[in-house]
Length: 124
Image 1 (cartoon, rainbow, N blue to C red):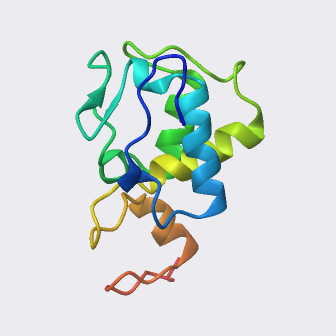
Image 2: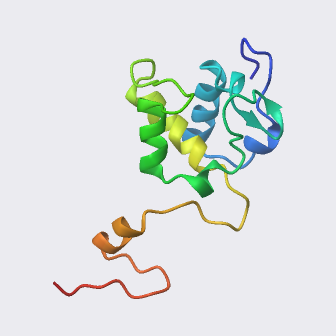
């Protein structure tokens, strides 16, 4: 998976991934995200390293960051199809150390009544 930048995605980020996550890795490569972001200390330093981005950002935050950009990151909403965005975010969500769950939106968990070790409130 060599892109124009010539920096391939390290193998550890491709092993044991779903088809959607592997498609997202391909989007990451083709759209040259490696030019600004690193994985396993390989790639650009302009943006943050993404090795554990799923610990810092929830799915909604990842979607918003990819589509709208922010900080030094340009918006990619007009440069990615909805399918590419979905795949890329699925790949980014998989970037967290084994045994550590990705970031979650606590208010969404409560609103949906999902139990996460503590009881979710169902009173009005």
